[in-house]
Amino acid sequence: LGGIIFPLLFVGGALGAATVQIIPGNVDAAMLAAMTSATYISLRKPILLLILILLLVENLQIPALLVGLGVGMLLERLLMAHLEVQGH
Image (cartoon, rainbow, N blue to C red):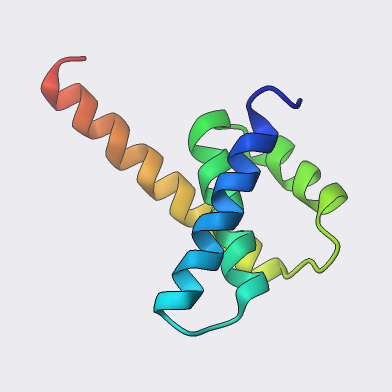
């Protein structure tokens, strides 16, 4: 689990915290949403990700988790569509 998942969780959390410095809001929710998005784009396994986040995050906010998952799914589909257009 530590090879790819935990660095992505860390980077997502850092991006969420940085976003709150630019756009004021709830730090916990922003970090959770960004962690979920970053990890989903790499894993593409939403059930595994939800279980992992449920087990690891202490201050869990379900709406932020679901928003992060939705954003991750949207970004992953846009990225895959972009790569298909370019022929990769």
